[in-house]
Length: 214
Image 1 (cartoon, one colour):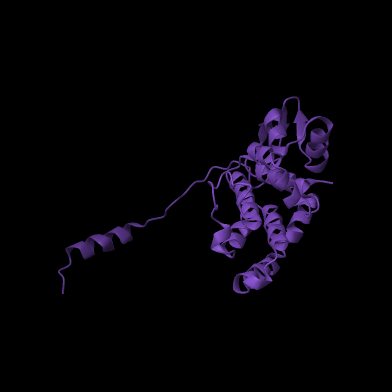
Image 2 (spheres, helix red, strand yellow):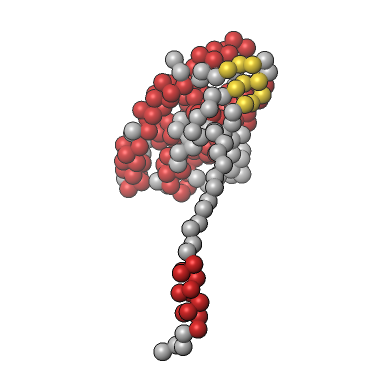
């Protein structure tokens, strides 16, 4: 099963964007209907379609008190913070790491706290979806990457890494190098910009420069 087939599972969530907006909007205008678990599940699912802006869109529909830490900096929410606020802040950390293409730090952060495991537990295949998304992003930017670097980006090693890269992605493993097939995003093309300016265009411009204002 190649990368584009696996990616279709991710795209199935993208088709639910309108539904996500509906639920977030309903909670925005009807706070009494808010369910923390539903909100966090929506946020986690929106992470699986990065670099799309779904996560930021969902954040913008949440109450402002969930976006600012109650007792500490945004990089380290305190255990005593309100459950929803702490969860939103932690998920926002993951989103920031993904947005900055710091995939190694993303996996390290995800494994650093049991709360992350609880938050992603209800999203089936979360780690697989994230690896596919990371692989898609990588395939759009490079033609070749060091194996050790890609291992840290995908948080896979040994046989699992080789299966994912070779079978799922369809990439070539060449010793310590991973070669990504050519595609329209990672193909380097020279761009030649040509402008066709006729002489009579200059003559009209020069004529206007000498015309007396009315």
